[in-house]
Image 1 (cartoon, rainbow, N blue to C red):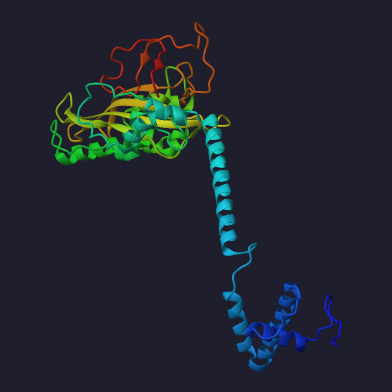
Image 2 (image 1 turned 120 degrees about the vertical axis):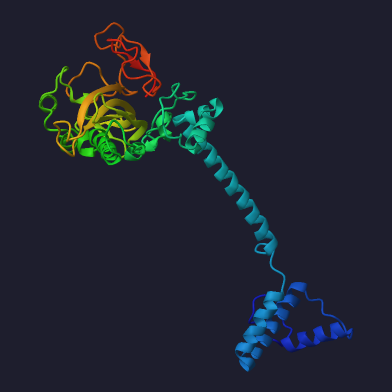
Length: 402
């Protein structure tokens, strides 16, 4: 009689049951009418006993053999490769749909905040902007232009692109835009004397319109040193204008300046375009260096909207005369400022404190008829086809673009 230690076990011993199984497989004798579950249970127990015996005899080799057999057996339906693969594809599709939904929502939010991204593409601004950014710089200006630059797609400046939408976007940066022509003997002045005068003319333009210290309102010492100190009337006029600006003595007539308490330049680049040439002086032994340049300065308000960028366009025409010290009473190594005119585009007409005051997009419009409302014609500050003052009027006008 066999023991009854295992749950569900009958009175047949293991040896007898094993003999019955062997006989059944060989087709000998009767096969016991034991349920199939019982046969599977016993077979599994015998298999484990064989594995344990092999493991004891062969150590790790036996374990390795067992793992190899397990790897060869088919996977169960809950964790098989096919089920895992199907589940992975399902999760992947769900993740893709969720990602697409997030991207779509983000795109809609961006369009809601910045509708110009879509509008600019539909209206052609985006294409025009890309074309302008990739355009080659214009050729050097050797004569007065015949017309104003095109303004097919005016665009607003930004902090990242302060010259966007402006012809100045393709102009040279700073002093590189002040090109000095080749010197020749003019008006009885030698090539060397003319070359020195040309170099000083460039230094003067840089010192009065590009020097960061002068721009923020400091005294333009470098520019003043270039001027002949024997021209006492001019020196007194400039000193008075710098000390106490008025409408009649405005330092902006010669120096570009802003108030650091009100304005902050956007970046450190000022765009420049113009030309310089030499003509004989009115008397022998003199030569006149003439210059006509436009300078574009981008600003933001201190404490104002940090994204609102405005540009002031300063155009200057001036004549610096160099004379032969052997014929004229002059200070060697200096030049005389014999004429100068300026045009300030996008700067308040009614303020005479010696600083530029540009208008910004966020500024409220002045009511029509008020004292501060512009009454003059609209002008294009980038139009260099006419001389300063040509066709001008006394009224304060408005700029067509900045």
